[in-house]
Amino acid sequence: MPPLGTQDVRAYLFLLFIENSAIEVKKKEELRATISKRLGESWQGKRVDRAFLKEVLKSCPSELESQLDLADRIAPLMTSASNIAGNPRLIKRFLNTLSIRRSIAKAQGISFDDAAMAKMLLFERAGGPQGLCAAARRDQQQRTWQAGVACDAGEGGAQGLRGTQAREGMGRAVRARVADACA
Image 1 (tube, one colour):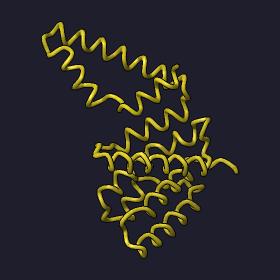
Image 2 (cartoon, rainbow, N blue to C red):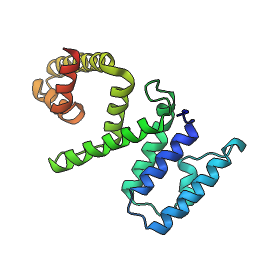
Image 3 (cartoon, helix red, strand yellow):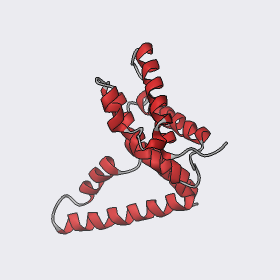
């Protein structure tokens, strides 16, 4: 299957997110037709991007709005990442993985940030195990340095580090995957 360009990937992501949204069916069809028409005009310099969708989609549920923003940001990465290279099957697999992880987090009562998880998934896919291990090591080194600074400044030391890890760190399941990949 030939790789898609950035405009194609962005339109594909928009359409997938719109299809899975709470928007009424008639409006979904209108959006599909409008996006498809605009994509056909992209050779003339007309872009399929978030600004275009804001013009077309006057009122948007907040969840869909954040998903469309995410799609706008990750489309260029999904085109340029060598392990994805604009492959529609891999893009759909990526979104399915994101959806599954969101469902699992929701079932376990864990807060879930689509943007953060999308970054992690992209990194897993594009960076491979070696990249994930390197990032985990850098993250741990930075946290150790921050803990030392917090202790020197009398800011709670280890407790401050645990708070930082809770806010910014990876969950237990991700840490386990990193440990397995780095072993």
